[in-house]
Length: 157
Image (cartoon, rainbow, N blue to C red; front, side, top):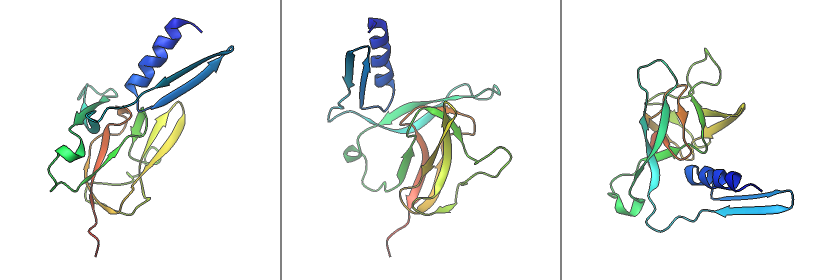
């Protein structure tokens, strides 16, 4: 296997949420592992680039301290992007968005769709609650791990 290809694979793993890549080609096996340290920041918010120019924007990962370093009063849930791709709020062009700010949601409810290489992946809520913020816009190119939604979980009765 070509060293340039290996370097590209290492770069791919370092820029994504992939924890492990195991590839065998022509009898050569390459295994790349990424093990975050205890102080590795978690990606939980997004920032936008190229705003206002009418073209697709890129949403890059931005990080905050690990949850144990954050104030305990923050009980909101951040829904991260599971993969790199294009963010869509609606199930199809011309249809209404799946959720809006203020929408009450159930666990398992579809929040958005991410397209990568003509594959469409649903992002679903893990907890019931209310949508507080939508951090990406329709058509944004997003990175794996960037925050897409802030959800206020429903309090247990």
